[in-house]
Amino acid sequence: MSKQTLVQVKHLNQALIAWEDMQFLAWANTKPAADSGNPIAQLLMKGSLSSFKDLRLDVMRRKKLDFEKYDTPVPVLNNWFNGSEFFNAFPLILSQWSNDSRRVYDLTVDFQKWLEITSIGVVSLNDVKPPFRTFAINLSVPINWKIKNESGSFDFIIVHMDDRGILIAALGKDFDEKPVITDKMKEKIEEAVKRGDPYEVAALTAELQKKKYLMTPGTQFIMIANSDRPIMNDVLEQAFEVQVSHDHGRHEEVKEVLCDGWKLVVRIVVGLCLHFEHHSRSKNGSRLIRPTPWHQPMPPNPSLRAIIDQAMICHVNVVTPLSPTQLDYHSKIREHGICKASHFVSGHYRQSYWRRPKGKGDDPNWPKTKFVNDTMVNPHKLPLFGLPVGQSVTMGA
Image 1 (cartoon, one colour):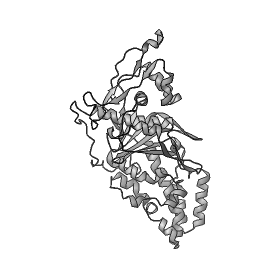
Image 2 (cartoon, one colour):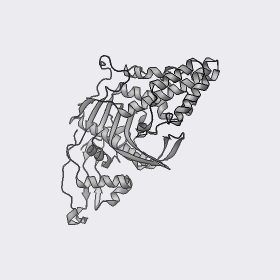
Image 3 (cartoon, one colour):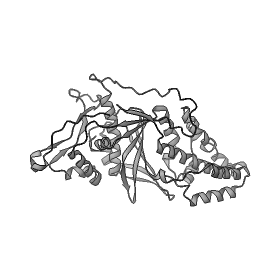
Image 4 (cartoon, rainbow, N blue to C red):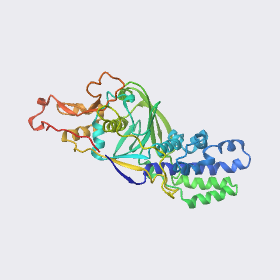
């Protein structure tokens, strides 16, 4: 069902390096004052500033994360991470991903498009059974987003689900643009810290800031609480607080209905979980595939600078290519958004969707694992040259 290989997960590695770099600079600019007896600086030295160098090794060894050990003090979060809640939660997210699965699902172009055009309108979060509590998705085709005057694109998604609901974090190409502080630069700053010279540390930090070493890569995430309501009702009707970080120092929480890009992200996450659930159940509903235990033996002598090289990248694809009608509908979704796309399709286009198996429709506890293919309604309204060819789509990976 999937191809497994060992590669580096670029955005996770970039996020870890960005977290380490900013923690290092916060430590360097705080420690001289703490050593001189400043009580506020001494308080700030607790938590992440005193232990940030251990995170990489702790995650690699799959140790249970001590959240207090890596908790970033609020002033440090505001001053060095633009108040980004993503980076505040990042040690926990990374640890959960490493302990739960170390899985990244690499979607092919066709499979990503198939997920984007498949409706999840009747699916509630209670119907979603993820392959692992925490996993990541690599998008072949970046998804554009726009919130107020800000815009960008996503190409990597991190998902965490528990009894409370689902957290979806989206990362983009901002991480490619952030310079990495070299070991030589860090040694120079560490020497100034050892001398107890806060002015030289500040001067060296200012030089890095001019060269954008202090930029906070843009990230967004949403949380959806567990409920029996259809997920898309929440996504389409309710306002979410979306956190947007900017590389020029601004950070804000925007409360508004999610943009079309985020609606596609939710479709991809939920649809992928349903896809795996569909293929992991026998006819009587029992699971055929179970997650691999996280406590597998680690490979000998792993590199401490590449904790995520052991990630299992699973390439997921559809067996049958998308039809011209499906491709046309996908292009309209990307151009006009989910709500308006159907209005531009000739005739009446019904999206593919998920429902409960035959005979289980009245059982609210039975998962929606039956896939219903998309189709054209009232095809007689189409011109003769536009009549769609019948096709049976087989899902697979």
